[in-house]
Each structure stands twice: as structure tokens, then as C-alpha cells.
Amino acid sequence: MKIKTGLGIDVHRLEPGLDFWLGGIKLQHDKGCVAHSDGDVLIHAICDALLGAAGLDDIGTYFPDTDPAYKGIDSKILLKKVVEMLERKCFSVGNIDCVICLQRPKIKMRTLEMRECLAEIIGIDVDDLTIKATTTEQLGFEGREEGVSAYATVLLIKL
Ligand SMILES: Nc1ccn([C@@H]2O[C@H](COP(=O)(O)O)[C@@H](O)[C@H]2O)c(=O)n1
Ligand SMILES: C[C@@]1(CO)OP(=O)(O)OP(=O)(O)OC[C@H]1O
Image (cartoon, rainbow, N blue to C red; front, side, top):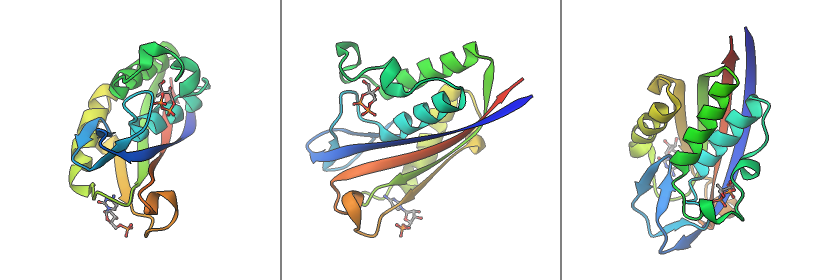
């Protein structure tokens, strides 16, 4: 049995009047992410962590932000494709742990919904996908509400 870890990070700019997709669900907010896709930073960080652990290339290599096929795409579709790539390499997911840096809105009350949504796509128990949120105490780009960042670590098991 082989165990491999992966790390993924993503950042998107926040601007008024855009839909705000995070962790596969739509949040009520006055801003949303500027992106080629739906801008779901949490899913993008998870995808990169999964790909890295599996010894594959990064998200932009497989789903280029210059390709019109991915314009406005639901990032849940990209996550499903990444999970299929892992399955082809005989990897199963042990656990995923994530942190979202976001000044506003508070999202703690929505993280179970995100975990349920993403765990189902990945095919793992909700307990094996954890999501934490932190403000950055008004410091940096997240603190100034100019953007949102997400970090994910994963553990993959190859039998
Ligand atoms: N966007 C956010 C940020 C934070 N939370 C929750 O608040 C707690 C305290 O935040 P600090 O920045 O002071 O660490 C944090 O542990 C989260 O539970 C949130 O829900 N949404
Ligand atoms: C998700 C993809 C899809 O084109 O585009 P973006 O929404 O721009 O997101 P980012 O994390 O900057 O880049 C990864 C791309 O694969």
C-alpha cells in the first residue's frame, strides 16, 4: 500500500454583482469571484491537491482558462473529472482537509452543506472532508475583501 499527500491553493478576486460559488454551493453575498469558470476557489484547491498527490499536473493544464469549453463551467464537473483521473490510476481518497480565508460573509453555518456536496462527488464520507474558515482579521487582500483564498491538503491511498 502506498500513501501520498497533496497540497492545493487557489485565489480569486472578488467583485460586486457576481455569483459567489464556494464549495459547490452558491452563497448569498454582494460580491463573487472573477474567473473563467464559476470561480469556486475551494474546489480548485481540492482539485490541485488531488492531482498533485496522484503525481499528475495542475488544474490549468487539464482545464485551461483559455479554452472556451470551460467558460463559466460548474467546478463540480471539473472535480468529477479529476476524481475519474485518480480512479484510472487506482487511487482512493483517504481524507481532505481545507481552509478558506474570507473576511465576509461568515460561512461556518454553510460548511456542512459544502462537505456533503463535495464528499458525494468524490465518493468519501463527510467526516473525511473537513472545511474550516478564517477571516484574516482585516489584513491582506482577503481582509480588505478584495479576494478569497482556499487551501486543501489530501491523502491518497494506492492499493
Ligand atoms: N468567512 C468566515 C470566517 C470565519 N468564520 C468563523 O469564525 C471563526 C473565527 O474567525 P477568525 O478569523 O477570528 O479566526 C472561525 O473559526 C470560523 O468558525 C466563518 O464562519 N466565516
Ligand atoms: C478552473 C479554470 C478552468 O479553466 O479556470 P479559472 O476559473 O480561471 O480558475 P483558476 O483556478 O484560476 O484556473 C484553473 C482553470 O483550470
